[in-house]
Length: 104
Image (cartoon, rainbow, N blue to C red; front, side, top):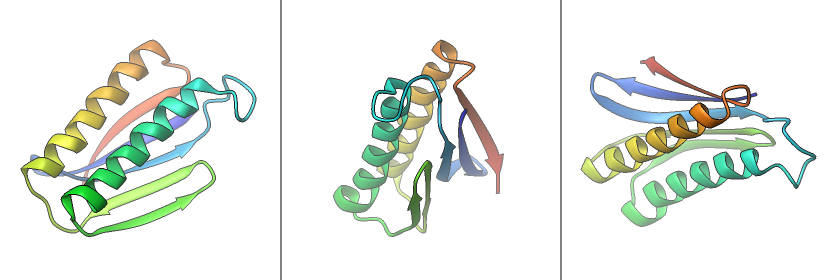
């Protein structure tokens, strides 16, 4: 199962951690994994490369963690969009994706 944990401080999202594998198909053919990976990379790259916010990041096989060190409305919109996207995917694939919100 893929678990995506969004970190929240008050009303603001401060980052996310995504780990695991959906195990719905063979490696390289798993569309659920591709959905989630694409959303994670797009979010991380948009926040750091387009908006220009600094972030603490870690990436490994089946793992990504992004914690932004500052925030603005654009970063919040992007993180909330990612959360909405993955929450909708969780409804379609409840045995493969779990979205969690953690207060930090």
